[in-house]
Length: 328
Ligand code: FES
Ligand SMILES: [Fe+2]
Image (cartoon, rainbow, N blue to C red; front, top):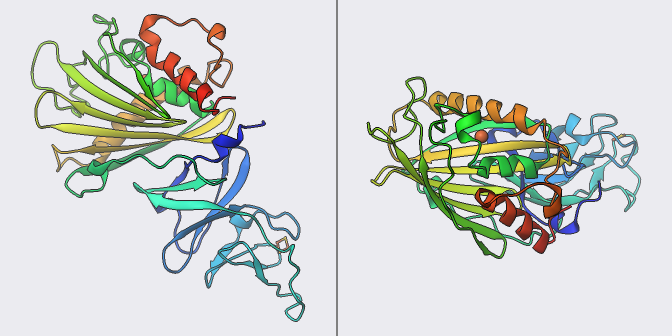
């Protein structure tokens, strides 16, 4: 797939921080590019093409040694700049300039490792709730789906499906109308807020902060950062709040991996497994629907699907992705 160059110039998540230790590198794919991520002795993370120049072996099968990544086949050593600095079979020779592998931009934030294949054009969002230490933060997933990241993101923003795909958990089939909402596009960020009916807290998953009212409502304030990042703040009219940080890794044009990090300022003593189990149920309910969608990628041309007024987010997402040169 020929991805737009601008998509390569965005930060994308490639792993939860804990998935990359100090000895074993991690191999993954970003927009069809094989990427290896590893840690040097100071704990910092590095990303490079997952390919040894000698015989094309995946470097991610190797190991980390003295701030170098060692190829598993003939043990050539690559430093943080991607330069081969040691060839055990011929330690005397001058190492050819060609002996290197391209490096990528790499950083760690919000408990995720982020990679940009080209000079990044957008900053990561600000989410103080996840960094101030007062809120309880839980990592859920990751959610590996056979769909494009754009479909996974649109599903996360889709209001009309809650009563049907998540009855009793996120929506109520007796109240299927989608409340009016306006979407504002500010460059590469979509802003919208919706107050919508919420299912009663279920006994299996008492995760939300609505009180014992007959028809609970939830205020959801969204920021959709193009291309695949959503920051959702939930409130129920009081002090209690929740923040959902969802971001999808575009592995290929028909494969993605969703990371969902949830912060809250109530029920601080609840075990992480309550939210992790809840989100696993929700995402599994969505997965079978989204994996059935054709084409696997969101069609950015409006004529290709049928849009109604309550699909305002999807329409604006498609419009903005095109305007920013991120659609394909
Ligand atoms: S293939 Fe990597 S060292 Fe030979
Ligand atoms: Fe859903």
